[in-house]
Image (cartoon, rainbow, N blue to C red; front, top):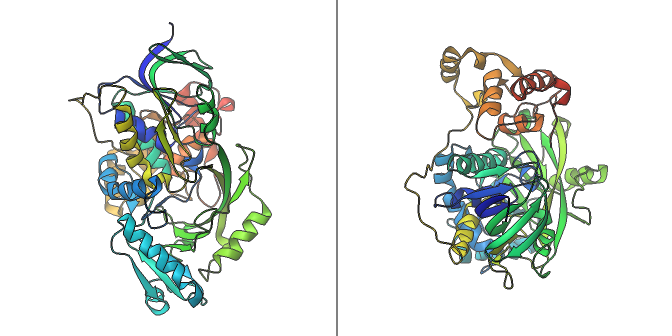
Amino acid sequence: MTGNKFDVTVIGAGVVGCAVARELSRYELRIAVIDRESDVCEGTSKANSAIIHGGFDAVPGTLKAKLNVRGNAMMDKLAEELDIPFLRCGAMVVCRDESELPKLEELLERGRKNGVPDMKILSREEAVRTEPNLDDGVFAALYCPTSGIVDPFAMTAAYAENAYANGTEFMLSDEVTGITKCDDGFIISASKGDINTRLVINCAGVYADRIHDMVCEPSFRITARRGEYMLLDRSAGNTVGKTIFQLPTKLGKGVLVTPTIHGNLLIGPTAENTEDKEDTATTKSGIDSLKAKSALSVKNIPYNQVITSFSGLRAAADTGDFIIREDSSTKGFIDVAGIESPGLSSAPAIAEYVRDIAAGSIALNERKDFIPTRKGITLLAMLPVEKRAELIKQNPAYGQMVCRCSSVSEGEIADSINRPLGATTLDGVKRRTGAGMGRCQAGFCSPKVIAMLAEKLGIPMSEVKKNG
């Protein structure tokens, strides 16, 4: 056989694929991650609610329930090890009528069965004391203090960079076109050549069913569920201090209003099934729906402060639960599919679960030289004034503002480009630093960022891409 040889190949460089790679890099394995996009975090992981869910919504006994609660409990240590911003701001689920109170009580009971700590139901008066902008029609709220917010871009990049530091190879801009079972594993046919691997771990998001069907008998289907969002300026970031949910529906957790880790306000998502696995359009009807529904839980939302809208696709499985298993007819092929919400919250626990499945097919010998930590990009805007001055004194590039809306300096952008698995596109820089995420949406900072990318990549500025 020809081509690259690996013990494990992960298909998909989203948050789950990168978390799995990072977990397996603890062991003496040769690991590859392959993705058709030019960067990690280009699919579902880049367009979601950025919530670390408490775990009270999932049906007890499901993988969603088990792995959400475990993943939530892992977040503090992970945030410290991987140097990513994370805040346990807490969450409320609100109801608007006494007749809906039993639904809050049902969520409370679910949460207790799932092992979510310290939950309680608040009267309107109790809820409004901490969230004065709750709508006047809110009757009561379920409070979960362990819910939090995170930067999903930073989290995915952190998993990937740490896996890379521990020897994982990333094959980006490389599309899987076929998979063949062979005596010692699999041959993955890809656009840049064949890959020989003992194990395949399918973390392909909305395409997980298609990857599965390349080598296994069809056993599940993934539907792309489009969710539209509105992002408001940082001036609106203090509208609420906690994530405010509405009662969930069969399509999801409803429209939420939440602060973001960088101080903005996020509203969304809608929920609309689509046959097109690439349909990330935003619509007037979707945005109008977000405004109408969010106003039912939170008042005084300054909708005139919306700086952008976007949509993402969730991978909804026809099983109703995460699909994480070795295929019954194809030993060595592990599906990690249907990872919709709470996938971001569950990612580190999913990685542990996959590790244990992999241990049934391959020896896992711990590496003595495993590096558990990673240093993130120093974000000037999140530093106290005295720390900023100290950093600028050490490196004057941090005193040269490139993105004034988000206060991102030349030093931060250079770090995002020059670090392991560094940015190669405008969106790559944006996701790592926030440059271009402010009011002008990259209107003023793009030329400088393009020039820096062109210099680093050794290409003309005209060849720098926005994304893949």
